[in-house]
Image (cartoon, rainbow, N blue to C red):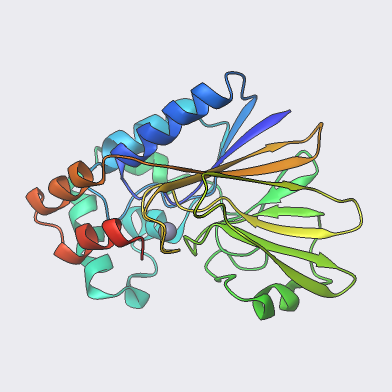
Length: 248
Ligand code: ZN
């Protein structure tokens, strides 16, 4: 089975379309599309981006921004720009789209021997950023592979007998493959499609081939200027446009 992993799209249609074009060129036969949440928030195309994900994904779980928009949750934790973007997004969405976001599953969700979650398998809003964060999960993971998002940092961690090793992102290249070993646990982040924060502004995604046990991360150039122009034209906070060109 070939799984496509998409996370943290954040209403960035230019990035999402560039990723989907890259996927169809590299992988003409994806079996299942898994989305790890944050379809909306920050970007200028929440309706269209949600439509795309809804049309192609087999399993979609909710992110903290989806919850904030559809359920009014987590807003107290948001910085002013994220909060402004949440209210703006709420005004753009059709009722059916809001219903769709409201009904997204809460992670973790089990998929064929592995799990997907937004933040961490223990708490959908928790960030796995450092080796210490991964260490804290050692002994508490239910499956050998967990795919997660939320941090917008592509890469992740391998845990082998209590030792945590970092899995690097492809930067400066566009592809990095990781063979999955039976003896280890893996926490794998496909990166953010629509708002990367790992100092590489290119859109991020990953695929997992469960037959060959190979996990492959990709980075894709996209039309950042168009996505930024739409954010500014919409009257969304300027910093949300600016950060796209620096990937932070
Ligand atoms: Zn996010």
